[in-house]
Length: 243
Ligand code: ADP
Ligand code: MG
Image (cartoon, rainbow, N blue to C red):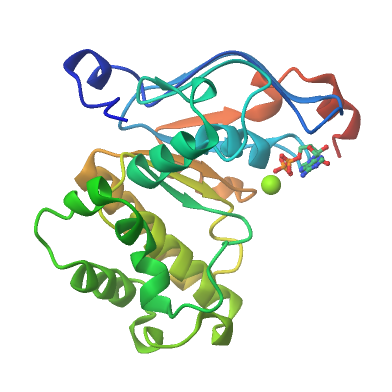
């Protein structure tokens, strides 16, 4: 895929959704969004009650899930038109994703986990602009206070440390879009502050667009825009389970 590099596509918003529907299997729609656009460079705080579809929406934006209907355009590329393999490649190249469950590789060290995106994709590696990948990984680990754990398997780390590994992995080689699913929930307030500073600085430097899900409404003023998911997601299934 070379999408996202031509002049016309480079003008496309970071995220644009049209008439998107998503259901798990044969179940009811849990996401129904008629239109949502996020311009490049925005930092978006996405919030809503548990079960309102936040994680599902992030899965659609990252191409982990495929919409049952509509268009999910990321950097001008409609993910719904890509095969599973093409969506995986697109994600590796353009996106950083901090999953709610981290999705670290248990048999790899901290350093190798952080290095995964640049090991998997040459175009992502090229975004390092000549910086040695190991140096880039180690620098992120130092900034996130996990340098002492670089050689350890991730299974030996605390939950808070694992979360920071996931964050370092999402930020390596400055992806255009960074997606975070409740990334601060296991951090103490000191580390939360430092983590957010690093996240914002990294996104600003790369001109990246940030989509950040959190329950912590005190973080909202730090962002350029807030989106309440229940206001844009009209799927009736989520309205029924709202709590
Ligand atoms: P949130 O992240 O806002 O808590 P989710 O996106 O996880 O919400 O869930 C939205 C709805 O989809 C909920 O009703 C949830 O039960 C359902 N759901 C989430 N994941 C799955 C899945 N893998 N299979 C079936 N239903 C799911
Ligand atoms: Mg969730």
